[in-house]
Length: 209
Image (cartoon, rainbow, N blue to C red; front, side, top):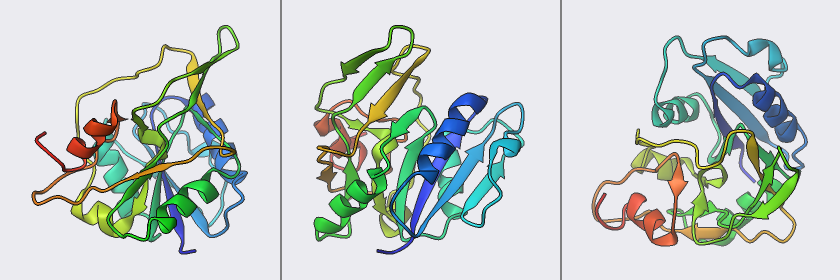
């Protein structure tokens, strides 16, 4: 398995970032690196372990999410790219499952993603099924060559979950789906994910934007 570069964009959420780093460090897949891109008002560098496989990029100005992700990928060196969100839980086998789904497709122009996940409402402790039919942006797994042809774009958007909630993904039983971003016209990845399978194809290059 080639080196897997995990790209994590964050901003002014040190409590989430600390947990996200911990989830990364628990991953069972070897040969990975983590690139953190932070444009918050205060630096979170003190939370980042000093390790050769973890890179912290501090941006001086507020930066759109798509640009942050592209900067993170440019600073990485892996052949496989895995997008992570700072407020998500990732099972220790998450990277194993995603990279396996990507490689088993037998193609070089695909994006693997999870379309069914659980949402933990921290205020009540309830674990809610978020349903299917859409791909979570924090689960995108793809090859660097795919990104070169379809880099992330800057799109308007916001949080789809209420404040104080976080998503929870478990590798056991999860079957990532694979979509094909190839298209006759230029296309770009959507950093926020898509609300339906059809939207994934459009935003990945099939159809109009």
